[in-house]
Image (cartoon, rainbow, N blue to C red; front, side, top):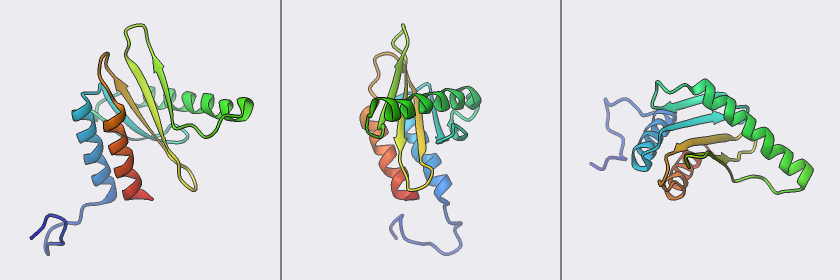
Length: 133
């Protein structure tokens, strides 16, 4: 039996659990310091690792969202795909937007110096969109 076929007696995997597994895999593959899936308002939904201070990340995500909203309204830019903040040590906070009809989500990752992120976050974004939208 294929792994995607229903097996009687086994508990169904929820979309939340599938998204959590996708984020855990992305986090491991990308060797990121932290991964946060947050609401458009910055409320944390999933954090990897689970003990990461999601309140700090959520505050940053909300602040970045405000900056991107201002860029749209005041500079006439199109809807943001990504906002990246880089520090002097070349650690990056990358916020990827997952637009939706209503709210939307933000995927934020802390990327260590010298690590690439775009391909692995693209894959995670596609998986999340497929599961939710």
